[in-house]
View 1 (cartoon, rainbow, N blue to C red):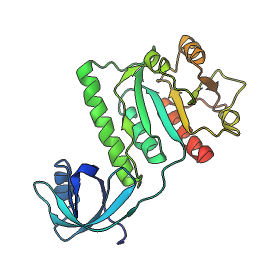
View 2: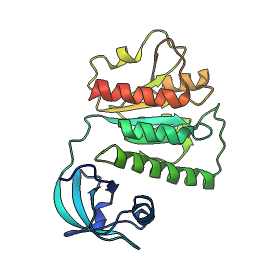
View 3: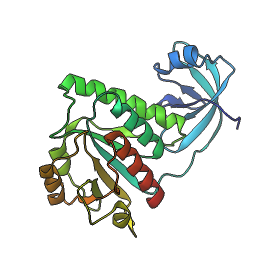
Length: 245
């Protein structure tokens, strides 16, 4: 396999026999941003664990490539990680989803909480979800993940707490937790499905923490420092991947 090739996600349904047909959304990026030409090589992964080396045979309007080799891209992570992230203002959500996708978060659930500053109507929430899904896909392509993280629709914190799954380990970092650290919570854990909750700029309210505890979510401490919402999710994702995988 040639080194330093551009890498793209293409759904399995677009891989036909020995040919890969790229979704039209890739055309501008391939032609005008990367300035690739017919005869160039690239990599494609289908989200199921397989990767393909392609020879580009067509660029516009829909790029196409001929499969030169096919192989297993890697092994799946042992643990599925879900991040429930309270909506953050500005471009903080973009950063959180990008970096946590690179680290290995599998599912994102953007949620509204008591202290959420950003307000979205239904149409705005759908547009944001679509944007965040594209960011997650791009991050997966860049970081050589073999699967694409899924960004769920924006929902309420209460709705997430009402859908607790049996066997799923659930934690919520909280600055007022003084007894149980994240390290202690993970000590000896063999969890293969974990969900964690990160509050907005003002944090979760005490009522929300109480509701989370009632739903079986364990409050944990991240140490002496108070982390920003865009920092906390990234830090916890990295710790979880290191400790559990």
